[in-house]
Image 1: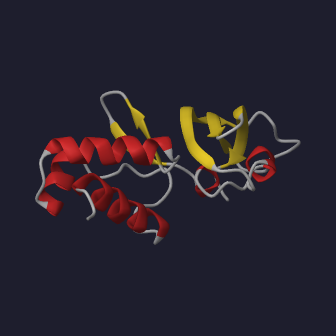
Image 2 (image 1 turned 90 degrees about the vertical axis):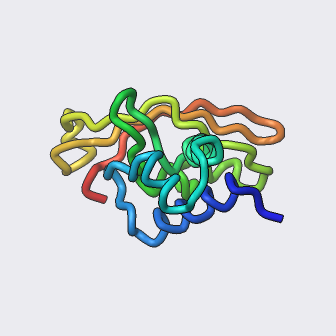
Length: 136
């Protein structure tokens, strides 16, 4: 039997993957999610926590939840690829921001996503920080 948290997690994840919520956009509010799925706040908060841990969303205090770039949850970076064969327990985004591009030599976009995350597997913990162009 699927829990309410897992159901909401799966539904929002599906909407993100289908592009109904685009990267950088503000996710609908907790209240809207509660109304949409006819549930209380607790399973919504737990689902949002899991989405954040898996790298799909990130929160900004007082603003809400934003959709992360696909690279955050599709494990396409070098560090992620190096552990792909191991059991991935979680990816936790610990910082995420959009900054002016001062690395024009490497990226052509005007702004960059700057991120820090921790990737945990059954036998490794990897701290990763990096930049991604916002026009990918």
